[in-house]
Amino acid sequence: MTNAQRTNVILQAENISLTLGGNRILRDLSVDICDVVRPGQATGQVVGFLGPSGVGKTKFFEILAGLLKPDTGTVQLGHPLQPVQPGMVGVVQQNYPLFFHRTVKGNLMLAANKRYPNAGEAADRMRDLMGRFHMADKLELYPAQLSGGQRQRVAIAQQLLCSEHFLLLDEPFSGLDILMIEEVAEMIGEIAHAHEMNTIIIVSHDIVATASVADTLWLMGRDRDANGAVVPGARIKHTYDLAAMDLCWDKNLLGKPAFQSLVNEIRERFHTL
Image 1 (tube, one colour):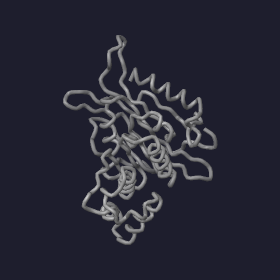
Image 2 (image 1 turned 120 degrees about the horizontal axis):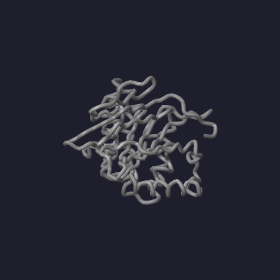
Image 3 (image 1 turned 90 degrees about the vertical axis):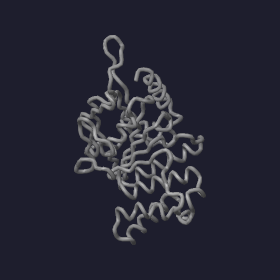
Image 4 (image 1 turned 30 degrees about the horizontal axis):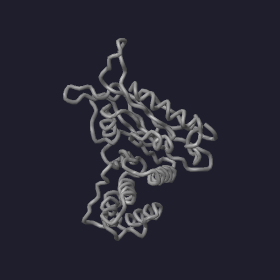
């Protein structure tokens, strides 16, 4: 990993198991996210979370956010680590849940006021974020007047105002054209690297887009017994350290043969997950 190292654990899931309706969803799932440090520059963490439909990604997503309690195991985050509580992790769903009867400013101030009791500080934080998102001129518009990409930026800003450093994005590339995917990927990188502790976890089916912006990839799947039968309960089957592989933080990444080989390998592994 050129000029970079992984240091403190800032998110830790240990021995997570979950059963719903008699079905084993997750089994003894453990994973860490470490602070990535590069000399002379703030480097946030972007983890891509991939797996087949129905494997349990959404439930693990909810557990990481503190929205669902597992049968066993713990999730801790921050430095120092502390048990996750609802609201500590921002969650941006696919449908960008904004109040359409409120302006962009109104939506964001609702979130900011929850975290910043001082109205002036809340407004300053909100305007700073929208400035960095190149949307300072959209504050008086309503969500219906924005493009899908602009609504997504507002939804991300809304969650950042509540949760500070940890953000979960559910299918952020879904339904976007190629140019918009590139724009969203660039935005995710900008948000992550705005602060050393910023950590973004992307749940997605888009292998190429997710791998292009991540420094780590998790592949979730199920084990199989000696006869090839699926063992109930998913876990993280493969982890890719893209920083160590020199496959991140590179604007020309998509053109690298090594990156295409990685994508092909992940696609093949999907058949066994």
